[in-house]
Structure formats: C-alpha cells, structure tokens
Image 1: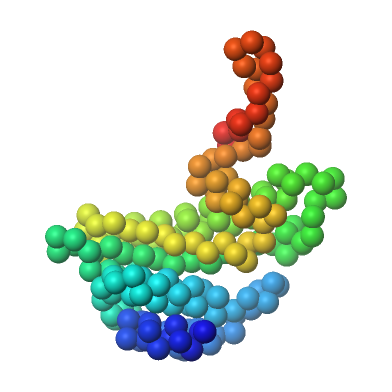
Image 2: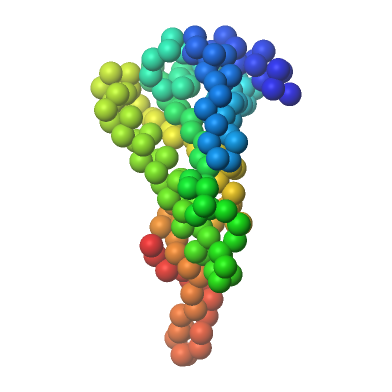
Length: 180
C-alpha cells in the first residue's frame, strides 16, 4: 500500500522526502518520522486521485501546493500528533474521568495547530502564500483518545463537558456542552 502511494506521490515530494521518512527520531511511543511523512504522502495521493493538480515541492514552503482557481494556489501543511508526555498520557485516569483523559491529548492537537500557524505567519505568509487558502491537515490517530471525534471538537470548537440545562418548563435537557 505504502509503495503504491509512493509511486503516485513521488514526483511531487520534496527533494529530501525519502531521507526524512527514514529518520529514526523515536519518542517514548515509538513513533518515527515515518508517520509524519506517510501522512503527507497519503494526502497528496488522495488529492491526485480526486483530480487535483499538485505542484512539485522544491523543498521550501508548505508540504503540498495545489493549483487552485483563478491563478491562485491552495496550500497544505501536514502534521501528526501523539499523546505527549508518556507518563501523563499512559493508560486511563485512575478516577475514571474520561474528560480528564482528553486534556493532555487535546493539548497536543492545539499545540500542533499553534506551531503550524506560527510557521505559516513567520515563514510562509507573504513569501510563498499571498492571500491564498492555507490548510493545516492534522492526523491525530496517534494521540490515542478514547473518543477521537471529541478530541477534534474540543481542540477546534472549544467543546467542553456534556451538560444538562433547564428547559422552558424547568426540566433538564441534554444536547448541550460547556464551552472551554
């Protein structure tokens, strides 16, 4: 599967792609650069299969450049996350509070978004990207949350704990959440 993705994405990959994907920079969860670069390769291959026109990466700027509309480009910076500190992210919280187990993991997602946005502002905006769409594509698969969809909701939409509120007749109703 990975070899097939590579045959599709190779003409668009940055010059040092193969060297970078092979680097052994493991953390306590035994992740290497492979996850980061295979995520980029996967996104690129999917976009190509959907008919998007990619511009080959020359080793500068965001990971993926798509020829977009009206002479503009769409840019994608790819990132993966992990649970962070090994001790804090290991196992389940002893008190059974599922929401508490999300805290270090949500921090990793928001941290990744913040870092990539900072790179955009400091290195890409005005140099590579001029009033064009910029997407941060995060793969949180290795963040190991109990409810992956909630992790994204918490990180992006500030979703807090589920709560009950009093309705018009004074009865408790669900379907609400605290804002973080």
